[in-house]
Amino acid sequence: MTFARVDDVAAELGRDIAADGTEAKQITKWLRRAEMLIRNRIPVLDEWCKDENYRDVVVEVESAAVARKALNPEGVSSTMLQIDDGNMQTSIDSSRSRGEISILDEEWDMLLKRVSSDLATAVIAPEPVVIPLPHYPYDY
Image (cartoon, rainbow, N blue to C red; front, top):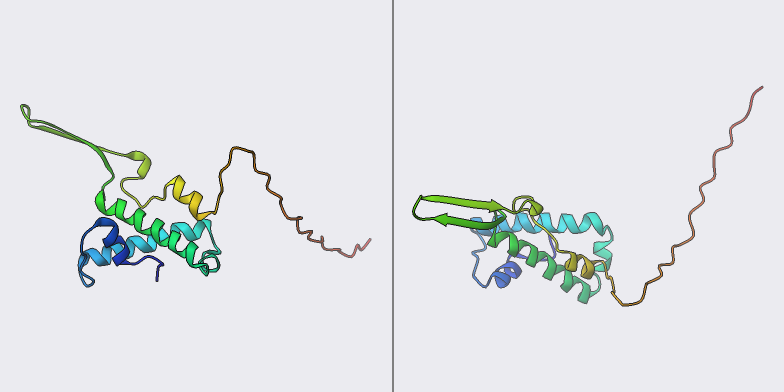
């Protein structure tokens, strides 16, 4: 089960989606894929989503990513039609991997709780965990 639901994507798209229809099944699959992308970068997602405000951000990001996919499933970036010659040319946006689910950089910033500022931000790393090396008996 994902945090965002088909109804969230329907609201993002501004249309009704039948809960038992093919489109709802497709959107459910895309929502799972979007959440899988997020979980790959944020393994503590369930813990962070205990905060209701953060969970709302996750729902917004997931539903927006899936709505982008629903509006342009093939990843078409431009289409040109020449009427005289009868030619039609379609360009696929290769940076989007042919319409795959994508989370924008701004959305990652929200998900990763980054705060931007004009000053450089110092990140204090925790002390490294020291793993003792095994001691082997030496037989000479």
